[in-house]
Image 1 (spheres, rainbow, N blue to C red):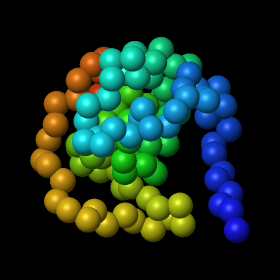
Image 2: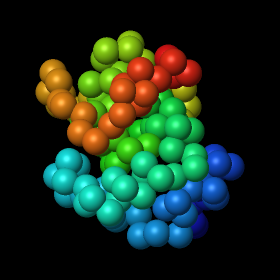
Image 3: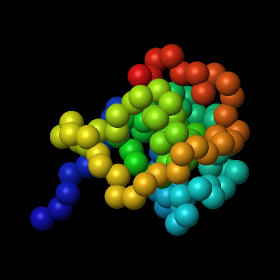
Length: 115
């Protein structure tokens, strides 16, 4: 029996559509290539991607931000990470307090539409 993956409609318009997903999930979850960061920053749906990731993704590089960067942003803006069923995700290990978010414009740090 196979799995059915439901993706948000905006994902078909993303700059990364059709790329190898492994590039967005590095083993150490921090060292994403400059190519991927640049791709995200030029993506037409990057804001939707980040908004989705802040609510639903605990790993990987989404919306121009690492998992640790999103954790920091969630804490600062009191955003809860949700499971697909709507429940709260309980972290397996304690997350670091802060991480400098690299290569993001001030607009990204002050998203008013999220939260």
